[in-house]
Image (cartoon, rainbow, N blue to C red):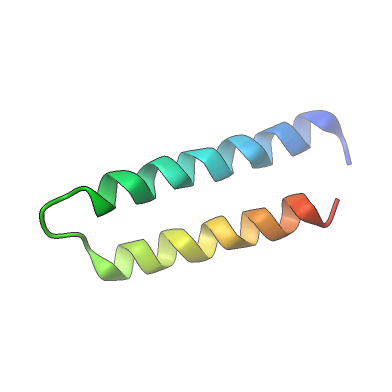
Amino acid sequence: MEASHMSALVEKHAGLERKIQEEMNRPAPDDALLHELKKRKLRLKDAITQH
């Protein structure tokens, strides 16, 4: 896999982690949003580890 593509995936993964943390720190986190963000983060992690 091309290094720039891999770094883009890693960057997106880190961005999703930040969004998850921000949402969890809110007084009333949106569970549906957290679920979707975590699913997207897991898909990215799978893509990163498969290459």
